[in-house]
Image (cartoon, rainbow, N blue to C red; front, side, top):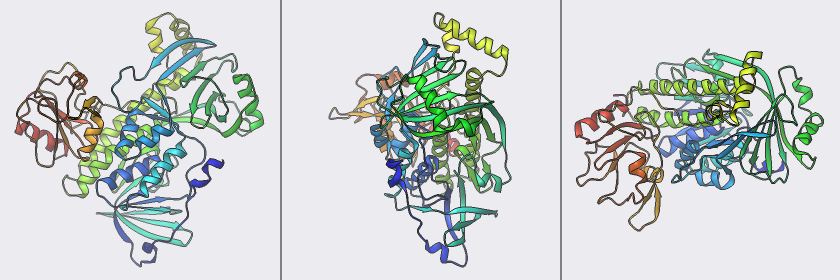
Length: 535
């Protein structure tokens, strides 16, 4: 794959390898995939020094994850790579579902305007990783070490110690915290003696990334029982560089080693496309799993991404939920390392992201059961829903070809329950919503950008009403309307947040709502901030 040749990196010996006693670092992140890279950048932007280890010396082969959600793009924007991702990626928001060759359902993932980031982009994972590595190289706080493979772990009261194998032999490192982002086959998971619990689905799916020139629209197309692949399902998605992702269900009995051979795959794709004018970029066969660790925190080792949980790829929940893990963890770990929050704040990472994992597994399992029914009864029900969906509204909503990733709403002790009455707006525990604003000179500024410019800490977001709301020490004020420098000319912010004059939202450093107030008082805001910091 020629376009990946420049994504290879060399091993370099580090002075830590010459020490008799292990060097001690605040944070060691294991695994330089999208989750590990993003988490390291997030911590570095907060002023933390991070050692990032990866056992390879190159960015992974093949497209792998390709669908990145609006929420993931907002995270990446804050990390300084959002614009690159969107520019290179294929932007889409419409999906179509077909039964045989008839469309039964069409959905739009972002029908409203006034958001900086699109609903989704498709982008090969190797590009996402390359942009993230480029950003890492700009940050002196991150020490990225290729061909450093963790082979042993020892836990102590106040730190963990890693043994690391390199081309020059082994050495040891100590860390206040180790974050395991080492993927579905995580070796660290075994080292802490943890297991995955959940369901492994027997159905098999063939992924082929093919390069071709095609006039298909930039939409997600999914077929049940298409004429070119009778009795099974198929998926088609555009990626950059004239590469298309094709996903074909091949059933539990198929011999994966045989079906993976290009000469077996080619006739299947030719039947689908009606021509043979394409070349293969990547072929893979997978069974999917909906599984998770019971706990994501194991003393000084914290698990994020695929090392902590796995879901089926339908719904693009894997990489996106991993990025949300990292976003949830980074600010909490930063406060704990600074001594500004108790270590017990990290328990809320386990609680909140376990809820999100359960949410993703539930959606993912339902999608899988609909796409690949286990029994004759399930298949009869599925086929009845598809038959009705063309004409009947309620049946359309039951069609499930993968419910696409959206941020979870946390039921968490960090949130302060509403006291006032709100008719809309993000509830405590929900992610902030974007809105278009105007600066004093009339230029367009998105709310997510204004939040970003507030510096990555807690923000009190207020619809201005004369006197400013009370802002605790260490919290940035972001005022909109009235005498404030940002205006809500179109009223979108006021509508999306049900923000009457004087109303305020306390936003956590990850952009989730900690509390909201119709008439904020010093005592109420202080109490909400203390709760959100786990104090």
